[in-house]
Amino acid sequence: MTVFMTSHYGMMVFGVQVIVGALLLANQYVPLALAVVAALLANILTFHATMMPQGFPIPIVVTILWAVLAWNYRAYFASLFVRNAHPGQRHADVP
Image 1: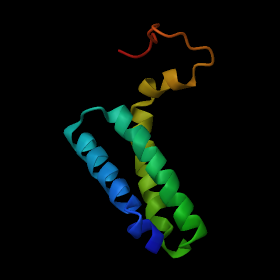
Image 2 (image 1 turned 135 degrees about the vertical axis):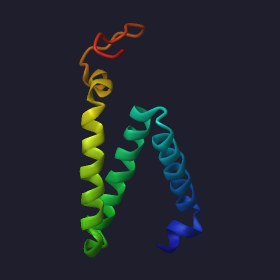
Image 3 (image 1 turned 90 degrees about the horizontal axis):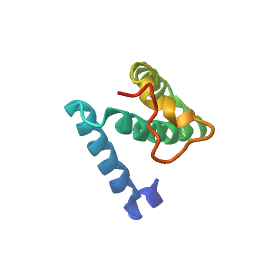
């Protein structure tokens, strides 16, 4: 944990969390914010699974809440799973 704070990596992660939280609260760029939150949650889940298992229930609850939101915005994520994407071509399902 000392390396996390002395390298100022913690400040960067905190800044990203604040920006993403503001985007979600303002209802702006929600799919982008959810994608960034997914990466943050992956790190949080890995940390708690490997180093601090007693704190594991809270990240599980937050991941479930994220999944509910991501499910509601799934149409915006569908284009991420296109096998042969062509630049400049818009996906038909996204408004």
